[in-house]
Image 1 (cartoon, one colour):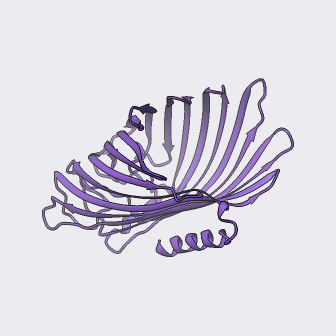
Image 2 (image 1 turned 45 degrees about the horizontal axis):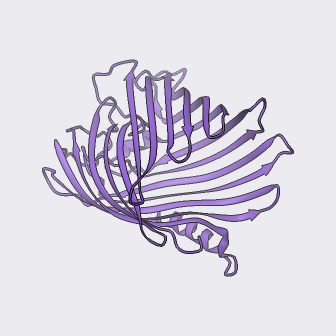
Length: 369
């Protein structure tokens, strides 16, 4: 992970000639402190030790950086590098045997190339990577996703308006490799290869509506079905959704999405429905308030009496609520107070944990960016 972050930083430095600092866009440095409490005595299939508890707590410090580098800007084509990397250090307690000090490195980067296609649209090719490395990963209920590296490639077409409707088509490939260890070799079961297609249509200007549908095929080469004629797990996931958004002075994004997952292995088949709202409003004294609420319901088609992994689904089907209050305190420097709650599925199917947290965050945008 640290090697990958170093390569990403090297690419950033190469892209910043001494006389061309204006190539860097939206550069942001951030850091903060959090306190979190966790509830739910759940066995974790990928935990390295057995030391779960009903309640746990943690103090967390974090630092990070993100931004965009313009590598090419021409009249009809452009090339950008996006990066986002960070470190979180935990001091966790409440466990039976010992306290834990997880350290989490996360990073992602992507190259995107866009080109105008005459007068009928824009094509964007994208290649990216994201990863995570976790040291001293604790047991439940303090859930941290295991380490992984995921490579992606995609091609998107944004078509020009036809009768005031804009269409878009996205095709992508994904390769996911989880970091198995001597004590958690089950993580190899999460490795997957997948391909997906999404088609969307949107209309409106200040207030806009978008509808979309997608299908994804996934293959898990390390998961057996115990069927000699079809030995490896294969999933097909179909999703459809609707979103509505409005901008200035109140910004809002409301949406609903339904997901159906079917497989040649009966255990991971599920149906899910998620509703999402993101609202930002200006308040007195230069305070901006942002409220995010996600409510998700998920049910497995086939109930299982034994604990099983849910590959690739850890914490994806979550219910989330957080309030962020932000205010500028100096030139290029913002501070925010964030209160949050999460209810999410761990790496055991149909078993959920809860997280409550409060954070103080600083975001700094250097001058000239």
